[in-house]
Image (cartoon, rainbow, N blue to C red; front, side, top):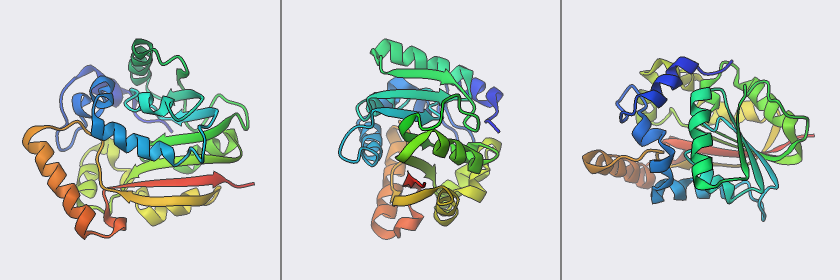
Length: 247
């Protein structure tokens, strides 16, 4: 049900950069570097505004928080945050980062996204960023998100879009990313979520969560600009979906 802990233990303990078939810690999971990136902060700020609905949700749950690469930004969009992840190694990094930054309103804990340790209706909003394609049964995770949300609460999902050629390639090669191939098409993701939520928003996103630099940054920027200008939204490399709890 949960991602392979050995894989994420290796990512945290091996501070290399991303290669084609391997996510690197330095440019993809280092919370200090990514929280210091204006373009990454702007991306997450735009995402979290979608669940604000005119005001910050008092109680927010972050499923799959990882190392906390966006927790600074998330803290500005909620009264309090419960941040959970299946990887104890990643949660340790997130806890240390929150302590160092004085983010007192964020509580980090190890938990299974398909068996959340919270009562029914405990939260006003839930975010799940790059989570569903890492679990065996994403429908079970969505069921838990539905359970812990109050009536009318909002769920935000952020996932790759494998209809994009680059996203297809980078999710086909690493074993831990291949679940995205069956899930992360806009129509498939929306159909799965709409079993328990009413859709309020879907959009393609032409930005990647990475702290690339130099030639790699220029090539990525050129690729993203080209897709933003020339490709339809359903081919953009990332997708964001927001829904409201049914019932």
